[in-house]
Length: 248
Image (tube, rainbow, N blue to C red; front, top):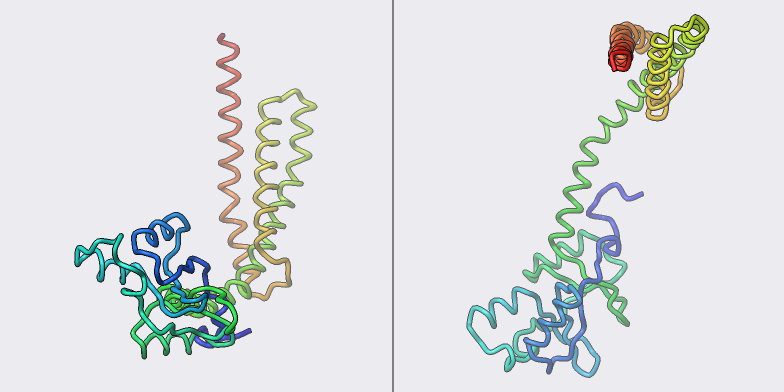
């Protein structure tokens, strides 16, 4: 795995949003082809050999702003030539250096036989920015994985175990025909099981050190009033619904 984003292969950043047109095609037809095929750049050829490049900027600066007739202007008159290209074996660092030296923002990537795609300055900048952010937060993610995921995973186990303890009261309430209480308890333990499975899926069930165990115990006590309130709310809603049905 390449750590430095500048040393990554250029092939991982190319795109295929380009078209290949002959140098004698006029700008109007070229623009229509670019629009229909959603291309960002034109590779201009002569006798099937790349001889130049035309971008949106070339069309804007050399045709639109000058109010030229796009039906009369040919691609060969506005293209940038010769074609500056990159080998498929080169890196992001080499691509950026080539762009800087030649003051360009788009470079075709080729193996000297065919063009694999286009790499742009914007794409490379976005990739480097993303890589820098990932590297910056890598230590944070490692800390979460090492210190907090075991707590989360074991807290999920505690919640599932608490849900199991509620099964007996739920069945007892059912046997005593306390339908409201039984339903409320069943809803509560279902929520506990669901939350426990979610925490287990995200966390890791690994041995805890003393600090992690302390955090787990405190978290369990903090969550206890929440689940008691949840059971109370479920029971209150069921009692209101039963009263409404009885009234009707």
